[in-house]
Length: 609
Ligand code: G6P
Image (cartoon, rainbow, N blue to C red; front, side, top):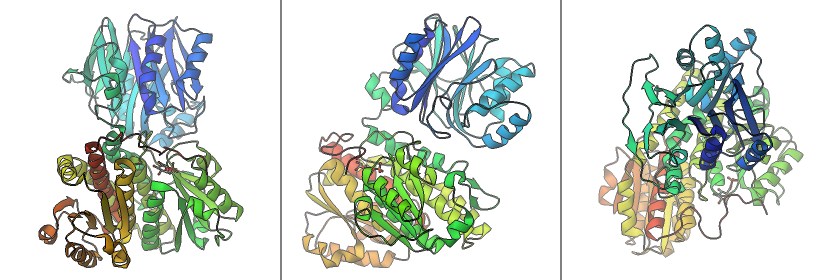
């Protein structure tokens, strides 16, 4: 989730771009850069780390042009480095990009054969070379840009400029946000409205497939085939802070809503439908090594550990390998029976959690292949692993993890498919069937979060309670744990997650009419058993909040609140169920007036023991 920006007008472009990038820095902050047209040349300044470093570089060498584009990066392809930082240039054109180009490898091979030299490891650089190639064919910037866009698959917001047409900026988008606006003899573009607010309150949100052409006199929007398109101008009344949160009151709610996109991005370009396989090039473990591994270990902390538990159910079911899951701080101090050649999977949003890192180092010392599933590209865990799958969720700012969790589970699905195919436990047709199910997941989550009003109503009924119990079975047992963790983290209500069948061995003693019980009861092979557990709860007068499959009719009479989750295969139900529990926790916490994004005593990343 990078941030892009562009300016064309009469003011100093570098100043406008830097001020704008400061507002976008929350979208990514591992490197930044700007390109400005100055005296008939493209001048680029880039630096790694926070924007401050770029500002320092600019102080040393001032830029004076009035047209430019800029970028703040959250790495997806290629580590954070100056070479991988945007803007990317090809001859006399330069571009910035937010998103993922799925077919970049095919383009890269073709462009290399045509003599284009690549300077970075990014997927983005192919866009610059394609644009240059089409301009060399004699097209105008706008025509060349259209031809380039037609050749791209994936998600993107792109802005470009060239030396030969200094009065024009071009932009487009597909699956990533982009907004344009007009000021006094100036035009602006950005990933969201925050940088524009200092210049104008009237903006236009571009839609997928739109091509925007910006000149100092304004913005015109056309379709990719060139026909004019009308987009309404919108007046924005948010202040800068609200705008950074996309109008949501908290980052947590914004991040919950970003999950369909985060899941899709984690899946994008990582499978081959024809062969029913996952395509995970950074895994760096051969099919033989995967086949021969005696067992699989998964280690993580906090919410990531819950994703790891989901991974255990998944891998054992789909891949038929023994999987052990452990908490980082436990694994490192026991005597784990890891053997040479075992596969060790570390899960971490930040890639910096001390206990997870220590466990991964210990596993490597014992001879395991260390794979990590990480959100932050270039983090310590990613660097120290033999192979990595990045969850492409963008920066997660709220302390309580939401989109990183569902991204991790999505990455585990891909990994399970990969191992299942390698071990030939899954056929081509099985693989294709699973891929179809994976692709439906963003839509399922979308449908859950659209029904937010139902969670608000539930929260009003229960927010004053002092204790909650969450029950789940099978692959939804970890989701009961995660639901309870979310509630306690942000609402300070005591909540426990339990395997529903284990309730009779203890927690049942606590149940009374004052203890709401959240039950996860999808229509799976454990359904009947979960219903019996629910009867036990009901017999003790507890209010029941049941999360059930869409087709469910029976529990209506038993539960006090029923929320229906889109029907999925049982193994995939954790993702939509989790989204529902996040929203329940969020609305309870806001009714209790808690600073949801910064709950007391907690840290986003725990880098000490
Ligand atoms: C902290 C955060 C949690 C997170 C855990 C593990 O406790 O508050 O939200 O799940 O660390 O972090 P990681 O970055 O390793 O996923």
